[in-house]
Length: 383
Ligand SMILES: [Fe+2]
Ligand SMILES: [Fe+2]
Image (cartoon, rainbow, N blue to C red; front, side, top):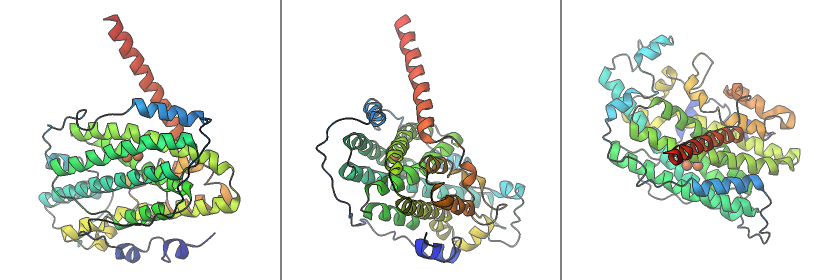
């Protein structure tokens, strides 16, 4: 297996200087990435993959309309929204033993903390938006590159889902929030790698397993925390689609990875590690600190999502709670002497290994929804 210097382009996985070196270009309107994957026709139209077929049927009936199904006339108070931000304020920091004396935050007023939480939310929702566009391009790429007809059918419904997700986040940011951020450079790097790769399964691994796995966890946390009714409903709708997308990734790759050699699995393990690090690096959110006039290095030192266990933010770690059990289900934690498990130990995320994977979670969710629909239709027939 290759070492961190080759995989990440830096010696230390926690090298903050190298992480902060990457900058996004706020003036860019287009980003061009060369897609090196061959487009595949298949003449085998037999629908032999029942689980994918079932997901496709589900996706067809679960479509919703972003324009008419969400209460866009809801008034959103950004300060109230920020009050439920996961950004830790001085009280929470003090409770976890962080001393702000002598730091840039020592003299921050309540208004400064509120402003920081608003910026953090603008940044987070902007990254959701850009990530959704990444998913739109990646699912379109899967339609072209995957060799199985059932997967082409399903991925085509995901293209529509992702267009809707881009639409709702763009509209929410435009109409309800005050200020966009460009794509985080670490997220951009990961999306570039996924689009450029010639192997069709790497699109799934990068997007459905890693990016969408993280998004599913992030949306779930945001949905549970926010009291803002429009955002709450929007996230609930988006999440119901995302759970299906991640399940699509796990089901497809489970079959494919069972047939790969150790050497081929090693390449996937390295890719998953690199992707996990890119996604963790983006949590630095340097653009927010630049806008707030705080040295990002100092912000990281005080509010650190990295580093030793006592400083690792459990909220940030939870973002990996979907990715790790899914990679475990795919056999990528165990392959090649458990290389990826050891690497994830270093990132502090292996505790999620035994959590429920998304295919099981999706089936449970699906069963609950089916029960509710049956109850509702029985009730309407009785009345
Ligand atoms: Fe999405
Ligand atoms: Fe998705």
